Amino acid sequence: MRKGVIAFLIVNLIVIGFLVNAVFTLITLLFEDCSADAIHSSEIPAPNSILIDQRPQLIPKIIHQTWQNETIPERWQAAQQSCVDLHSDYEYKLWTDAKSREFIATEYPWFLETFDNYPYPIMRADSIRYFILAHYGGIYVDLDDGCNRRLDPLLSYNAWVRRTVPTGISNDAMGSVPQHPFFLRVIESLQLYNRNWRVPYITVMYGTGPLFLSVIWKEYIRWGTTEEGRVRVLMPDEYNKNSWSFFAVYKGSSWHAGDAKAIFWMGQHWLLITFAGFALAGCLYGTGFIIYKRLHLKNTNYNEKPTSSWFPWRRNTPTGAGFKRLSQHEV
Ligand SMILES: *[C@@H]1O[C@H](CO)[C@@H](O)[C@H](O)[C@H]1NC(C)=O
Image 1 (cartoon, rainbow, N blue to C red):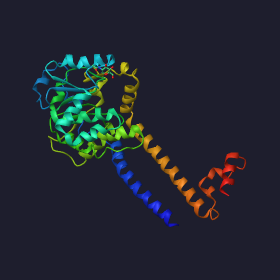
Image 2: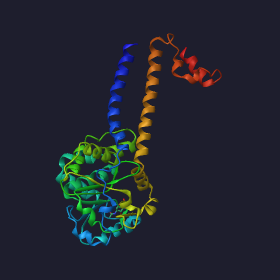
Image 3: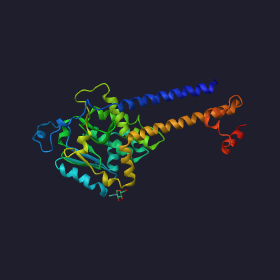
Image 4: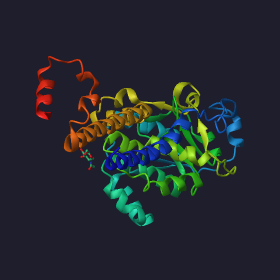
């Protein structure tokens, strides 16, 4: 083998090594059933149960939501109002783009440059929610999630996230005490994960979105945590499926909005998108290899080996005009 090819293979191996390392966490995520930290149906009192008042309140009574400005689109007003109405004794904070930036600039100036330079606005909307939970604590709720009952029982944990099917966790509803080690770790990890993956979905999902959060979470729980450091997991039945669930998803109406539609679709299908992204990256990479191989042989000694061995379909295509032209060009 030629030196160039060997160097190319070594670079390949290094890149593949990095990918395997990243994919390892993703694969272990696939087998994570959250059983160790799941919030069980049996431990959540029914909506009007007297047991609710006997539970400790750790998370502060604040509901956080985000939108670009103070004008909430009509399609989400009912969802937003349902949370406000049920929690008149909670503080309600709407984080507009302007307020979010001001908050980062004042409290987390080391992050401002990253925050300002995110290529997609959704990445600012994703990252700000981690900072406000780490800073103030409280419960973050996406604008398209309405409240189906009071969230009080969820204040009894140090932190919680929401399980998504088939795997991982989402960032559309989360709660935390201030300065919780998980959310501190999340905000510390944002810069490291801020990479341009060329595929916008991957850049968003793996940079700030549910995939990013799931990977950080998986690594966080790998070696166990203290009781205070524990992150409990809200399971699908308690999320939105039943009369006793905490949230009622108003997605029916929000799905008419163009860009928001794509964003929520991405949020719900991040696993599919991720694997599609890796498959695409693999194809591009393979194509790059074929092109390299072909150019390399062509530029050095093309008579030595028929390049068509890299194009098995060409061996039996005697009549394809396009292929003929290519072949002639080579010789
Ligand atoms: C909020 O943003 C929307 C969409 O960009 C715009 O139509 C609306 O006028 C803005 N509202 C205010 C109060 O700035």
